[in-house]
Image 1 (tube, rainbow, N blue to C red):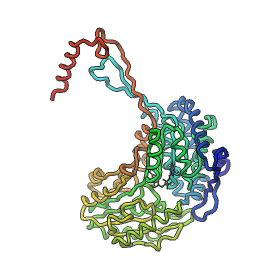
Image 2: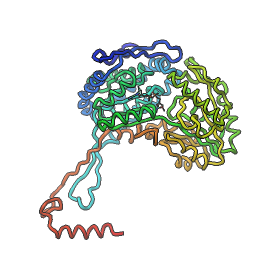
Image 3: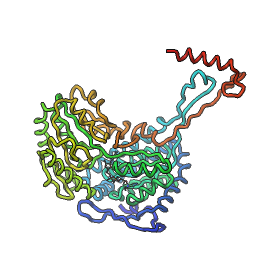
Image 4: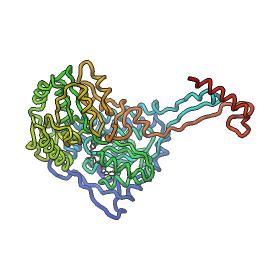
Length: 505
Ligand code: NAD
């Protein structure tokens, strides 16, 4: 990993040049260094993207499909190099890095292959009053989209917005997380390496901290597609409000997992263990709260213990999971576990001793008060709360009881869909963990404080276009018209009669 890691932006014009050091979260060793892009460098990157936009749009869906598929091909060809980098900078084991790449590749392919069909012009009926018109909707790219990403899935998450924005005909400027900058630069540079004939600026990247992201929000982009915490999402919405720049916000979650009386308890325990603890719990749609019906509670807990026995985080490339990527998140997890223990919770697996930075061993907290931090706030660590409920009705009420609404899981042999429909969440996986996240055609996003808008699927493509309504008069109706100053009173009488007939109850 080498040429691709060359600094992509020039920070020398900024009043406050800084350097961003990318480190390995397992041992603190340096992975790479990048300049911190200030306001000027960000504006310059947006200007390059703006200049490249007409050429990219002119390629049309077929031309863009070819470029996107070449990018995917390049990523597959260089998968070992990329996964080594993900392991080094994000900390996740190599196989997990590869699986993340698999999800991203499928997203790129879906967006590339479906944009033409999903965004093709659409005829609509003009209605009887306008029968002499032809009416249709065309979908035009927005222009330049600013993509701001997190560190937990540093390839998958920006692909969910970036690849869809590109497929829809926009150019993009990407600001990766300060914790996974080298991965972000690699991801963007791979697009350029796969498509050397394209003008500079189709897929730009700016590196830096939150200030660089804020500068991107102010830099006259046509939309910001953000993935990250709810707290930052709110700041971004406020910044973008200044110019009414539209926002797509993919924020945090506190996902619930419902285990009904008729669940396959063994499968539920396996899914809760992996969905809650995998990636060291640093998954936006990870399982955080389990609601289990009392008749199956003991069996569920005993199966969960078995699933998690021997599961530990470590630096090894084939560990169950790696270190906490962002050091400050360890304190959040510690605070939540302590608060749960103070609020009636019992740790049946692990406890405060499980926190040995940069690793956290699995922690399962039982019957913690519903008002505690561990139940109400995103923990983002390898912890689960498990609450016993009388029945599914109580589980649904509690599951819907936080300010978040990203995703959810239901285990029930007979009633999975019914229960899923009652959950206030953007997505639900029935009888498996996180299924929706691996289906590129399904929209992905949250309700409440989990976000605004959708990535993936047709809905994800539509986030990056503006509908343009076109009404074409096919022939003029002879005589006076409703839309003219010579409109006779008799004509209005006819219209009123028609309306009374058409809309009579
Ligand atoms: P974060 O909010 O701290 O940072 C995300 C990005 O925003 C980073 O690139 C950061 O530099 C940038 N940023 C920070 N302040 C900014 C500002 N004022 N203006 C513009 N940009 C700014 O989030 P994180 O810690 O990187 O990621 C973890 C969070 O992301 C968790 O809450 C997780 O649930 C969420 N997440 C959500 C999804 C989803 O699809 N809903 C996916 C992955 C992660």
